[in-house]
Image (tube, rainbow, N blue to C red; front, side, top):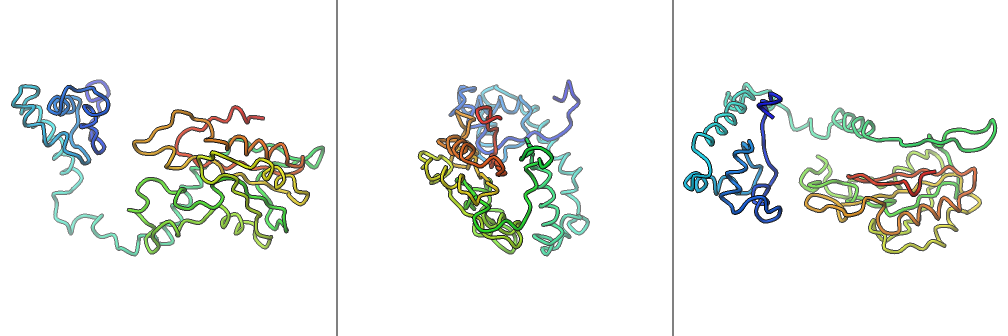
Length: 289
């Protein structure tokens, strides 16, 4: 990176990455070999875990690397810290003068909301209805009445599962904990304005969705009063996350069957919206069209 691309930045590993070279990936022969390989690869600091700092001196003693190599990494690390001003007087640091009131302020919330909106991806917005009355599925018009709005899926009422890793450490400023996260149900009802509350059928016990009552889903989706169906589907951190990968990128468990049952039962004029909650890719080819 440095020789070919002129990279002058900072190289840091995640927690336990150097140890994993031995215990998981098997790239290194032992702990000292892992530390030497990491240093040779350009690592300047390990976020946490002792794989580098606990074994680099032994690696030098065994001749696997040199003090000069270590000094080069330390010098580069300290130089970047100096460039960032971390050795300057605290009173001269702009980041030490940010008041606590900035956290969770209205301005901060507005920026987070805008970031979330820009992070959404609209895959398709097909027209519903025939002839001159055809219109895009979204946006849904507010004010849907009794029984007209149906919310399906395992993420209809989840809260903590909508948050990412380390949410409990971050919190929400003045409000902390999963109870602060609005559900899809509450957000949908708020967006519906003066309309009636959505009818909710989660269909699955959780995102793994080992079982779904397809007859109940079909009955709910095919009810005469239904004008809009929102499906809240996807993964959660029990399926994918830090140190926990998937072997299948399709919708988990019986979620696909739930979606298909709703699509097949919905009236031709009903608007059907699929919301996906996922950190990694989800394949939807089997539902395309």
